[in-house]
Length: 124
Image 1: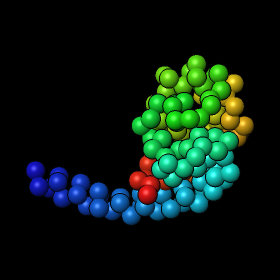
Image 2 (image 1 turned 180 degrees about the vertical axis):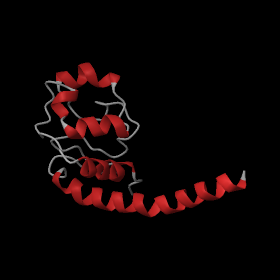
Image 3 (image 1 turned 90 degrees about the horizontal axis):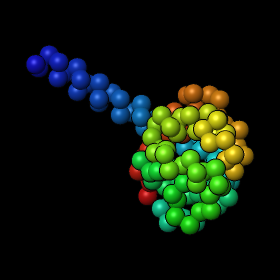
């Protein structure tokens, strides 16, 4: 049993710095999002909704944001998790046709993963 636990513990310890690096890269990549989205707790919505706590939240539920009819119709079936966020970030209009989000997407998978790591990170 111990011969399985030790490598697993080592992998978890080594993964933590990589996750922190991903979140740091995600913070830099998120700079292209800040024109439309805030991410601080209690910050107002902008052109897009505040993304504080988005991971684990149902789509289209940021308080006080006026969502498109398409998001209202289809968003209730979506919970933002790493997989759904990856699809959304790759091409929002493919996930919810008719979305009001004009952003075309992030074609680079590593950049999307970094943004998701940043969104998952606890914010002040």
